Image (cartoon, rainbow, N blue to C red; front, side, top):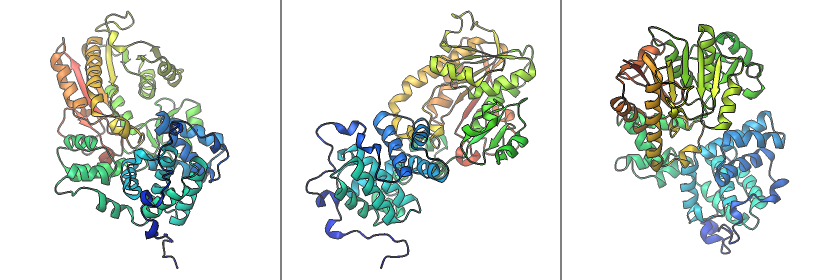
Length: 495
């Protein structure tokens, strides 16, 4: 008789898949088909939610797609909605968040590195392992459905998949971590990286930004693996946050005066978004954009600039605020596609969109030096602050990305300091807590600037009583402290 969890026990005669499958169908095929979609998956033998999740995970790993872009179209194509769509979403994002730990477990269970497993089979096994270790799906259902999926995407590997999953099912997630992770007392970074599925260099960067506090680093990693709520921004002058919360069955945000926590469902179906009264935007992004708008300013206050505007969330909020104050925003975006998104996001607002490079301040007649009162630099960055929402980013980013990014960040901040008039304000923002992208970039840029600047205490520009804002003058928001993305904010005033 099976136990209360209905979990099948491994067959010890077949417990190590690497030994059990003598034909080794889990190996990548010589023909290179691992990198191409399997056309035989058009009519899946497995249920549609799992097939949708497989397609999304495969697109991310095979094509470098982004889950937030790939999954919605897959759900539409398969006609999934409601609970089925929610289950497919949970499987997709959960698998991508836990990918590093799942791969370590599958490597041990299979007796070979996951890199040596045919990619379609590997992605199916990842989904199956996630169900076994992180959901309430009964073990027999997780195993059988995954074997069915493998039968569709990797014929000949069903025995291999069954053996691997039976081995995975023999331990719960904590037991696997205890087996595979290095000891916390001798290798805390390595332990946390495997236990909470983040690359070691990211764990190290988080720990450094948190002052070496490993307990708080652990809480951050845990929060990074949770499903984040959808935050809406009620555009000032167009929507009241309390009324919008009632309209969407949600609740007003904790900190931003414009934030609404969605009550669920697909945001794209909300009338307020279609009508331009609101947009989807993390509460942290709202707070840092609003900080620039509320900072005290002497003299003229009519010309605002968003130097890196795509895809348009912060421009949408600043444009709505500007409309109520008789100001006008110039939104600059170097990518033509993203510039179109900015134009779409700021339709009917006092916003001019320029498809150009923000570093051309002074050379472009529409970006004259000392011509703007308030300037936002939402700089391109590693995006380590939004790993809850973009879990695939943690596996794509590398430390080698930092030199080019930080050089770009400094150039853009230098351009912003040229663009702002004397007495005007510049807000430097990144969705990353990495100290090289935050404190190092902003202090070095201020030191090297051709104009004199002073730091404004950014804490005073955020809601009164907001906890965990540090010693100033800059501010770092955190998922585990504030429920927001890990947004960094520095505000500079040109002398």
